[in-house]
Image 1 (tube, rainbow, N blue to C red):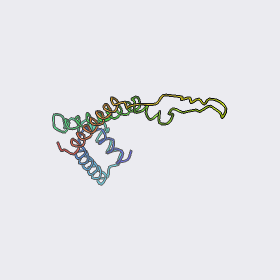
Image 2: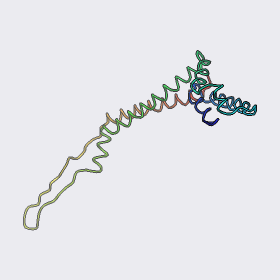
Image 3: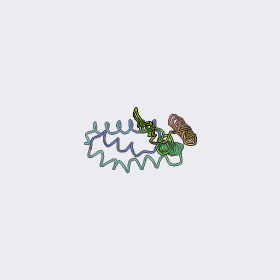
Image 4: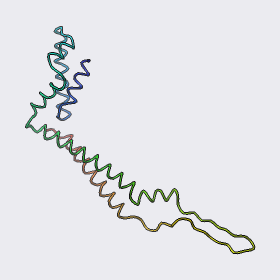
Length: 163
């Protein structure tokens, strides 16, 4: 495993904000570079430091009870809530009247005229004409879109706020 892969696996398991992760990544790379200058190989360095899981667990243990852990959990909750709301909005759009209106716009009613010059003419309508709009589906979609925007805003605020 290369130095970059090793550090990437460690940093990927750390529960902290982006700034803390960058700082840890820089420190790890500097420490590994110093050990390489001292003549150790990457395999020896990994054996000395331990597995990526162990190193990350040590970092996470040092963050226990700090605002970094709280921030990380809030960010995860905000991301999950945003993703769930987006999926719900798509499902509502597909299964509400809006989805049906899109279908009817493609496969709308058709009109057929049968008749001739010497007899009566008949007009046949196949399908139903859509009247009105499904306002309940639109209102629900707008509510879900508003909630999704609020979750996105909360996530952006949490992401940029330093613990």
